[in-house]
Image (cartoon, rainbow, N blue to C red; front, side, top):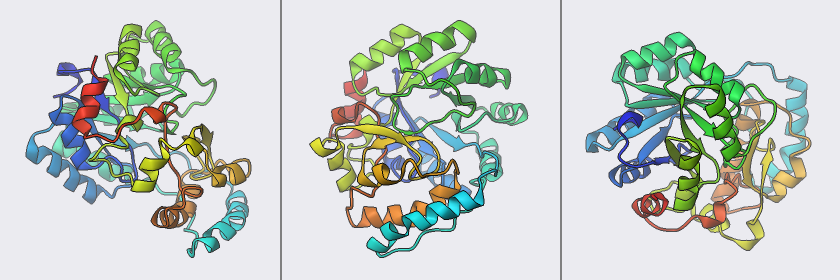
Length: 332
């Protein structure tokens, strides 16, 4: 199954870092949704294993890939930020990571996807080269690009994308755009894209129930992508403390922050976020690698005031049920 022949309007959005497990993708697919493996931060070899695991059971799926940005962070800014974070690392009994730039094995992942021909491939953090889109389409993949503005949608259309994932400001996790400028609420973004580009739209951001899905379909989207709604599902890779925080009164608010990764991302408001957001440099993925051991130690210790807990604005609606039940609850 691909976007060309969806049996329902629900997409289980990719969530990198271990949350979008193959089990979640399979369960969502069996329930009639289109699940996505998150290639971000995965070695290409591990991605190949996950693709094989999902393919073995015949569940419909796609793969999301991070487009590498330029290596233009100021090293001095990153070092200053590292000095600021050392007391947090010391408190957790860990050390900070090496703040390096990498391309996240981008070319190796493209080669893999062109070779195995998965049904759908989406890109986040940038627009792929037209020749890469063409290679994936020759392999039988539909290609989508995550966009946060009408300008980005026009760029995606220019390189031959089959559809765009319109990410509203309500969405949890990293902002997927790359051109900057004004941020849009989801319904406004869908309507504006429809006015400037003849391209199919998957709407993402703050969708947690059937009413939200109906709203974006009425606005002109082909389908609705939900991520946070699946975080508390049985098949999610989110840990117990993260799951509990999503519905805890002390974590009622979300905010965009660069504190954890150097790139704006929406998550539950924590003390770490409040302490360091203003000082965090615009340096992705360097800050991501710098804080990765700290975040892992915080997760192991259930230290929710230092954990990165990505969540959309409708996070309180997430339910602790099987992924199939989440799909049913989202389906109008």
